[in-house]
Image 1: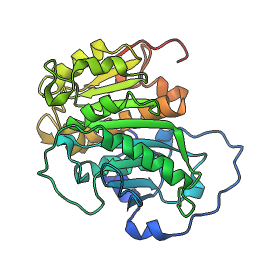
Image 2 (image 1 turned 180 degrees about the vertical axis):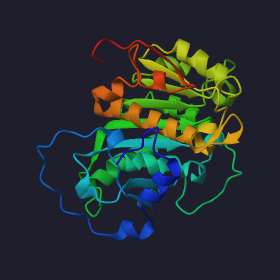
Image 3 (image 1 turned 60 degrees about the vertical axis):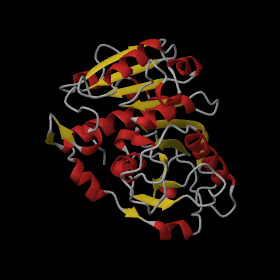
Length: 313
């Protein structure tokens, strides 16, 4: 089963089984023997999902909530990692993006989200602390080694994305300089020309991994920063824009001011395809962004720009 542009998001949520904290105490399943079957694209993969608190994170920069496929024996290979920062640089809660995180995990990714498992705070406003994303990578590395972890030897710590929405996107763009990072997602975000919030556009020169810039058009308060940041980066980059979304429509399911879950579905599909392209090397996912017949280019309302990709890259 897949999340496609024809698959209603509410149905997707009904299909995803979310098992909560108790699952963290279960014993690790025995690995299955590798299958000779061909790889299935992430967009065509759909798992039941576990949401659980990250254990053994007390000495790290934040608490974390983990989203992963529930049946690890059904996962082919190891799980790529996506460490996700929040809008408003919330460091104690990740409830605003819980639906996005669940759906990314359903498509075969380990999502390590900044914020505690049981903290529903919505009014927190912070400033960028990129260490919260970097420590999320560290947590995944440790969990891959921890003897009693259900995720032991099931995490691919060589395939790591850092992502963030709005202020969390600034954290992702700074954290993207870390050599452990394979892919960066700046969602409704971008550095200000005046270096507001403590980080300026000079940070973009430190990036070494491909970047996806996602924005909601002229009514998105990050629109101008997104364009300027995309123009400045020298790494391979894609800018995907839909002016119907504004600053938060992708995540709240609002199109042109009206409730419409399909725009969130389109945004999540874009994230899944980007992660499958840049973390897994999927050729069909690459074609979703690159070339005259790119898949996202054909979705009504979306525009796509790409630069610095070599043929076959």
